[in-house]
Image (cartoon, rainbow, N blue to C red; front, side, top):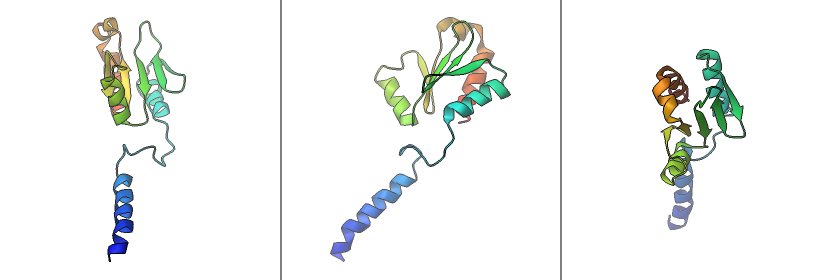
Length: 119
């Protein structure tokens, strides 16, 4: 029985990690940026576009930008490490908003936050 315990412990450790959505990339091929962009442009009618490998920018003057991470833990770590100053963490994304945008377009921010919360 003693010789099976290490193998059993390894198996259990592997299975425990499989249930976490933050354990790493999943087998799901959906791209959170693409889903968020579709929500913004198709459902909310917001003018937005992809930028680089990990961002969405809302195409209005001083519009918000969204940086995506693989996991919510990674986004939280970036914010905690000071790389998300002034940003709001929503799941695996950081939403950067210029102060004048926050004052001027509450409806736009509600649309963006709603699309990110649905991911």
